[in-house]
Amino acid sequence: MIYLDHNATTPLAPQVLEAMMPFLTDRFGNAASRHHLLGCDAATAVETSRQQVASVIGADPREITWTSGATESDNLALQGVAHSSAYRKRHIVTVSTEHRAVLDTCEQLESQGFDVTYLGVDAGGLLDLDHLKAAVTNQTLMVSVMHANNETGVLHPIAQIGALCRERGALFHTDATQSYGKEPIDVRIMHIDLLSASAHKIHGPKGVGLLYVRRRNPRVRCEALLHGGGHERGLRSGTLNVPGIVGMGMAATLPTANGIGTLRDRLETGLCTRLDATINGHRSERLPTTTNLSFAGVDGAKLMARMPELAVSSSSACTSALLQPSYVLGAMGFDDARIQGSVRFSLGRFTSEEEIDATVTLVAESVEAMLQR
Ligand SMILES: *Cc1c(COP(=O)(O)O)cnc(C)c1O
Image (cartoon, rainbow, N blue to C red; front, side):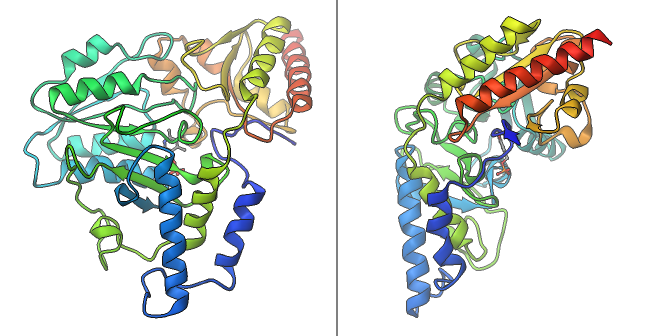
């Protein structure tokens, strides 16, 4: 099996499993039970992880709230700020290519009387900063723009967006699930007020993520979604997933993987040389781990079905349950044929050159066979 679907999820890194193991066995304490040693041990481990994940983005550990993953983080960021009594404004600005966790939450807020502006993107998947400037008024509560897109890897200029929001007095949330631990992020320099990330996209375990919420300049007010015990400074009640949190902390300290961009380029060049393929997404403003390609005259799902030994994605893995053509590629203005013919290849830190070469051969032969029939 060749696994090139890392934007959907990643395998655990061996160091991560090793770090988690004691907390799944002997060190099973509840981090809230600080009246005995086992509980204190768990609480200490959680705080070490909090420092580890905070330092990746230049945050204070006290600005990190543990969640069950980025879906919850996005919900908490948007609903929590929208429902805070500290704010009166009811306008939110986002982008049509956001993850469903943001878009569905925005729709929910619309049904509760919030006004949401969905900005479009160009053929490269990038938002126009002038459009953003025009959309953000003094009535705008929050702007939510993802850092890297999960389907195309396209990177939004979050530093510029953060500066613009700061200037206009709007809060800035970014879903950084695909870029956290891969691309440099500094929440201070980039004026980020809230940020979502998830462990299982960075070789950590599933079911754990974080929300960064700025504590000063300005202090962001965010209302809890889950009530019951006041864990996480009241922002997220519930017994902490200590093994998962320890795993995310370890995953955050893994050195940045080198050479993935070279492998991705090798894959792209290999496929584009042998086949009639088009790259979907901006060529340079993109994660080095991702390529989304459309093969002319071929259906992406059918192509995938011919290659059971290759794990890739024909649309967003999170939404492919709906069997709809990708709304992300649709927003980029592509016709149905280009969308239907699209396949996303996403690489991880354990991807090898041999796997890339085998993928080029397999995909090229499969596409050629499909076109001959
Ligand atoms: C995977 C992903 C999510 C959802 O994360 P979970 O931890 O699986 O809930 C949200 N946003 C983006 C951009 C993602 O890639």
